[in-house]
Amino acid sequence: MNAQDLLACFRELLPISLAQLKELVEFESHSLDKPAVDALARELAARFRLHGTDAQVLPVSQSGDALLAVWRSGSSARPVLLLGHLDTVWPPGTIQERPFLIEGGQASGPGIYDMKAGLLLCLLIAQALGRRMLNPGRDVIFLFTGDEETGTRGSLPHLRKAASGCRAVLCLEPPLPGGNVKTFRKGVGVFTLRVRGVAAHAGVEPEKGASAILELSRQVVRLGEMNNRERGTTVTVGTIRGGTASNVVPAEAEAEIDLRVVSAVEGAAAEEHIRRLRPFDGRCTLEVSGGMNRPPLERTAAVLDLYERARGAALELGWSLGEGGTGGGSDGSFTAAMGIPTLDGLGVDGAGAHAVHECIEIGDIPRRAALLCRIIESLD
Image 1 (tube, rainbow, N blue to C red):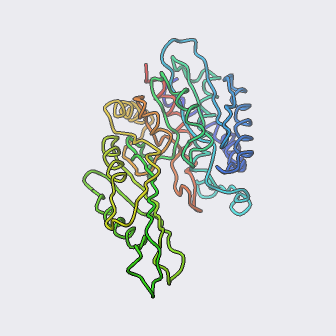
Image 2: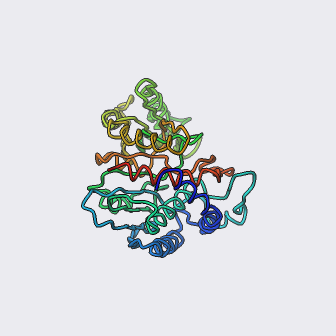
Image 3: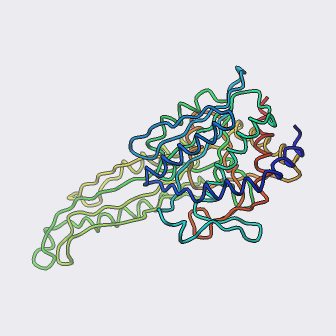
């Protein structure tokens, strides 16, 4: 089926699609509410099976379960993976405060942009496969983690197993403003710096104390010097805690550090620099914990090849698809680090990820679904 025919079919399905989207948004799935995420995984598994796709819930003990669905083509060609997540940042009950709403060509509701609309697109692709609207020439795998918003710690083994051996990964995270896809993402590191000093009475014998807060303050300035706009490295001290009382030279203090890098090489160098921090005051000791929790999605030749396929597919559908990057991480960062060509930001256009004005452009649903079909077919 050509691009325009695909677009017409998905436009015909739009009323049903919006009804499905409403159900997905109203199916709350906060990252820390494991029973809710698990229930959504079971519900989606049932819906994928209706379209002739094998689906199974993958257990995760410490967070929400993951969902794996596979449409089998009978081909030996390497499969393509459509990647998303079930969880949202919105706690239970948010839907009562901000219910699903359609107004002025937009649909809004908690989690709709990040990323219930992406889940809808995957259901539409499964439906297209079941109806033979799409001929992928390979197996199509769908993998949805249940803890992306909190770091994908529990789901990561399932993600790596599903992605292993894939020809490409298409990540259904929201696009950049205006609908552009993401060809690079920064890697993310989270560290805690703990300082131990020497307590003393601030009025009687302050000279016998070694202030952990003063030492930490000096280290914060040192960390700030790591920021490098040319290399794309940012280091942010986001929180500081310390001390016990105003009349005590503080013996303990700690800071949480956010590190963002554009390459794995830069990430390794920055992490080593943080771990090798030394105290200004020899009476103080430093302890660094944490590390990189998401690798960068680097803008490689393989990623750009995948983008060019997407750009060509968009042109067939009558629009120009741009590309860019972001400082935030996603599950696509893990697959890119495995050496698998990964294109991110293929979800429905909109705005307000993690914000109260979260919404999507209704008219973008059919063309995004058609775009995904054409990208999958282009992999031959």
